[in-house]
Length: 360
Length: 135
Image 1 (tube, each protein chain N blue to C red):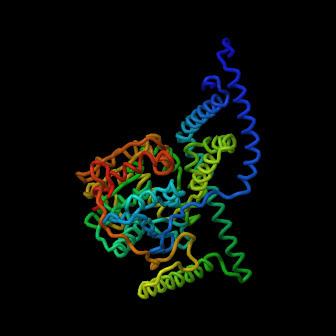
Image 2: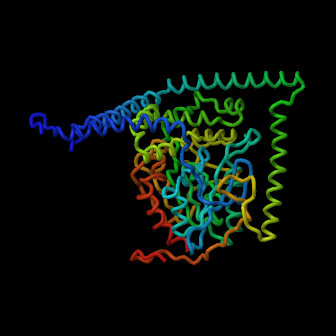
Image 3: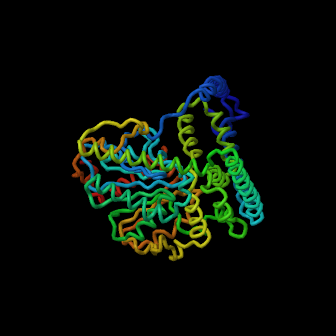
C-alpha cells in the first residue's frame, strides 16, 4: 500500500490487468458487433386479429392456466413500434402480463402509406380504437376491456375514453401521457406558430417523414447519442450491456412516419391551442372532456422524463372525472419507465397490483 | 480495491456523464430561444419546398416518358392491398368456420392470422390474497 497516495498498488495492478483484458475483448467483440444482428425482439407468440393499413391488432397467446376476466388492450404510441413492450423473454412487459394471468391485446402501428396521409386524429380515436375494442370484445367474449396507453397512445386513449364514456373501457392505465402541451417547452419552441408552417410542410411531404420525428426527439438531448456510442465502445466487452444497448437503440431509431393530417391536427389542436387541457378539444365534431372519464385510472409518470416533462403530465389526474384515480411517479426516464431492468422492479409490479383487483 | 475517487475508469465515466448533462443543458437552453425556432423552421421549410418542386418536376418528366407517376402507382398498390385484405378476411372467416388451427403463410414471424385460436384458459383468475398467495 502506498500510504502517501492512499492507493493499493496490488489492486491497481489488478485494475490494469482488467483494463488490458477488456481492451482485447473490445477488439474481438467490436468485430462481432458489426458482423451480427441484435436479439430478436417482439417474439412473444401472437395472432393478428385485424390489420388495416397503418393499424394492426395483435392478440398474445395466454401463458397462464387461468386468466383474469377482463382483457387488456395496449394502445401503442403512434411514433414508435410496440415491441418496446415486448423486448426479449424476461424483459418483456407483455410476457410479464401474460404470466401474471392477463389476456393481452395490442394495437400497434406500421408506417402509414402515402395514400394514408389524410388519416386524422378522428380516424385514430373514432375508428381504429373502437374497431379494436369491438374485436377484443368479440374475440374474448367479454364486454369489459382495460386499456393501457403509452405516451401518445395514452392521449388517444384519453380522447377515446372521454368521447365514448359509456363504452366498454373498464380501467384506464396511462404511461407518461401529456395533456398540458404548453409544458412541452422544446417541442413548443420547435413548432412555434410564428415560424412553423405546418400546412406548408404537410402539403409538401404528405406523411411526416420518420427522420424528422427522430431528429426532434434527438434534439431534446443533442449530445446523448454521441456519448452513448462512446459508452458502447467502452462496454463492448460486456455482453449484457451490448444486448441491452442494441435493443433500445434499434427501437429508438425505428421511428414511424406520421400521417400528415394527424400531424397537422396534433400541431394545431394540441401544441398550439392546448385544447385537451383547455377543455375545448373536439374530435370528429364530438367534445372530448377529460371530466367525462369515470372509470378507474392509473397514471404512471417518470421522474426523469425528458420527452414528456412531469409538468405536462401532472394535471391529468386532477382533470379526470373518476373517483378511483391514482398517479404514481417512479424513477427512470420516458422509456426506462416501461422497459428494461428499471421497469421490471418498479412499474410492472405496481401495475399488476393495481390492475389485478380491477380485472375480475 | 480501488475506490471510485482513485479509479481512473470510474472517474472517466463520471466525467463523461457530467459532460453529457452539461452539454445537453447548454444546448437545450439555446434551443429554447425564438431565434433557434426561426432558424430551424426556415431551414425546414426551404427543404420541404424544394422537395415539393422536385416531386412536381419528376411527375411531369415521367408523364412525358409515358410512365406511371408515383400517385398512380400508389393508387394501384392501394387496390392490391385492399384485395389482399379482403383475401385475408375471407381466409380468417374460413378458418373460423372450419375451426382449424395453425399459422397462415405470409404472416410476420411470431404471428399467425386470427383463427389460429389456441385453447383459451378459463377467465376465473382472482387477484392474489393479501398474504401474497397467487391463485
